[in-house]
Amino acid sequence: MDPPRPPQLNSRNNRLTEREEETSANSQTSGDAQINAAGPPAADRQPQYSSGFTMIPPNLTRRSEIEAVAQRGEETFQRMREAQRVSYVSEVPATLGGRATLEEVRQRQQAALRCSKVEKRVKQEEMERRRRQEEEEELQKMKDEARMKAERKEEKERQEEQRRREQLQQDHLRRTDRFLQRFDRGPRDPLASGGATHTSSRSEAAVKSGRDVHLEHKRVNSAFLDDLQGRGVGSEGERGGVPGAEWHRSASNHLQQEPSTSTGQPAPPAHLEPDPDQSWTQEADQYPDFDWELLKLENMFPNYTKEFLTDILHQCHGDFESAVTMLVCTLS
Image (cartoon, rainbow, N blue to C red):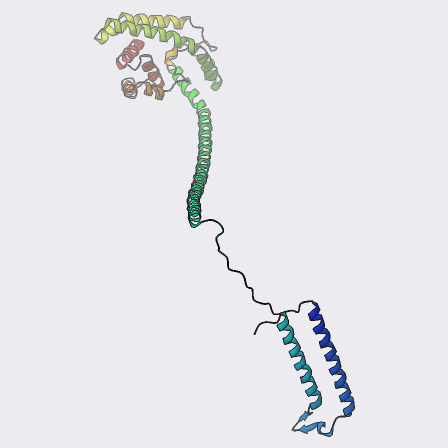
């Protein structure tokens, strides 16, 4: 059974509705008249009491009238449904596909298929390119973070190295003072026992005039070494002969010509003073056997410090024999 449909508002429906209203009004009027004519309820409709229940018999006349009205309303509804039922659609058959032939349609389908494949490939390439670009950006970001961390670490290490050098500067000055005191041959100042003030002033004066003395002795040492290499002497006695004496005498004369420090004592030779701007580790990079030659010099001359022997070996360009000759001439 089809579901009920709402009535359409047209002239035919309006007429059916007016008819139904008139029929309902007439039936209601007739029913009321019959009820009024019937008068009071009959004796058979008296309430009956049985085992705790009260039963009132129905009004048969009223019941039959209600059933008749319901039946008329149902018939009216069915007639209205039949009137509003939609008729079946009937179309004239026609050829589908338009005016294009089958071959043209196939060609269009093949072109669309090829274009779809190309578009799909282009879309995949674009997605792959975007994925690679995102990966490269992520990798570049990680590289930048690692570079920043490395720079911060390098800066921290540099600051720590600078702090360590500042802390070791005092120790370096004390060692320099002890080194200078070892080669100090001048008379003792009675006020030398004063402590750190005298030592500090002497070290400052030595550093001030040390550069010029160092250059002068380096020139004399170079001339002495060139003389040794030119003569090609073999024995140690010949190496320590006249050239060594001349070099030692010129160095002594130069030291005598240098002004004394504020304490009245002569400044030590500059080649005996360690250069703070140079390190024996740098010399080891220039000369492969520098460490070994320096170790042999330390074993042969244990009374000299490592900085002093490093300076001597540097002036001899890493030549062990020339360094030994220079040290022997210095001692003589």
